[in-house]
Length: 405
Image (tube, rainbow, N blue to C red; front, side, top):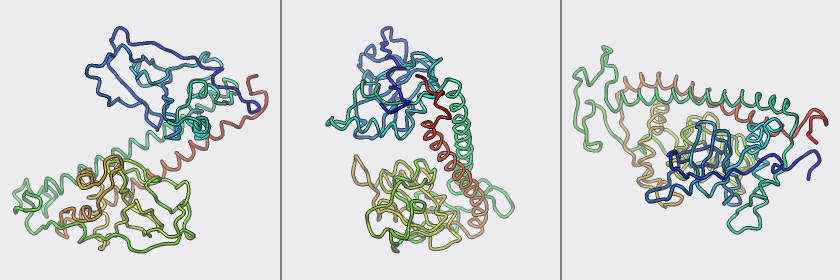
């Protein structure tokens, strides 16, 4: 055992309470982001008395596939008083909270070093399983409870700021989506008199591609008329983890990018420039998209779309950011376990082409939204890096006397 470290097993105890009276309906699971999520399991005809009960403040973890996923699915229940969890999970709690703060323990489990240690412990198992004893053997540094509380408070300050940023980004996203729908789905953009076009009797004409009426003198065109895939290549030697983009460092649900963990072994990759739209082509339903703000390189699993006319950049990006576009990609995707978008299918996506007047008006609004989102994403990226730094610093204590003997 590393000096000044103890085994986690010294501070926790298993809890094994079954759903005997079947009075709990909420069924949860834990994802690889270490968050409780509603279970999607089909429980029709299932004996629910075999499920475990987890209470607020307790931990739930699954030890089955740590070696495969390289992460321990674990979380602490904080949003519900009680819930059910599969019997495949272990439920446990801190034995004495005057010695170990449960939030501090969850922070320790959130460290990449903890995941790496447990992944290493799974090396001998074909399915990548670890045992309860393996989990209990995980080393933990436990300073005084006062020091733990201080560390938790500092970490929670950053985490709460991240959550606030996410809420603000969600509001921006909802506002941008509502504006797009109002203008380009309902066609109630402001006319020259400032009145909603369609509702005020604006002239409409039937469009065969969309099978609906659109404003007169507007058109519907394939995406390839306005964009093209980047054909330029860039040497890996001229890139860094700061400007290399792969599907791994693109964030789900349109949250942009983060710093790459490493560069690929290939000699060259696709080049992108500021203003390009990058879309992860692996599992499109994850909705990974980014409006490039610098020059860099991207892996083969990332689509780099260059917009031919700069006047259309904000408009095209807003179109590609819509859920309907990702649904379209999935319709033409190949593969089931790891679906991949079809490039020709993507380029044949039908987009509306508005009048120059409406395009100019919308661009002014969309740039405000995009710039605000960019700032919020950059703040969130910084805060996430800061939270990781705080997790890494948990191994550092100010003095030897802080350690529990």
